[in-house]
Image (cartoon, rainbow, N blue to C red; front, side):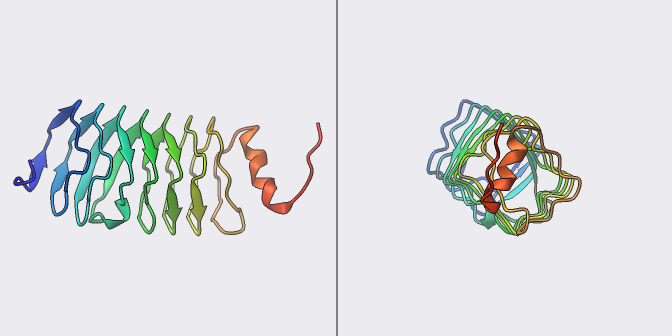
Length: 172
């Protein structure tokens, strides 16, 4: 597959792409189902309307992707130690995912959704979280002074995590 540079409307099911080099390739309208994408190299890779479901994605530097028309959707994925910094991820869905130890620094997450996701150890800093949904998400902690929060959707008890940076004590 590394010799092919353009992949359109392909459904990859159960593939182990661990340590593959996807650099300089284009994935347009593709679906990755139950795939292992650990440590995949994505330098200047185009992802346009790509759907990841039930995938294991570890150590991927998405910040190295080609950002032109970048769009993808994640559902029920294990996403660990990935970097999404400096990307425009407007409207991107991360539904029911485990997003652990990832970086969303300087990211535009306007109208993105992390609904039902576990965000343990994930960093949001200097990110635009306007109209972003964290409904039923767990373990998110970010400084409201270091991110743009306008019409950001939160649910209890997760929303209380935003108070941790103020060193306040919340009693029942």
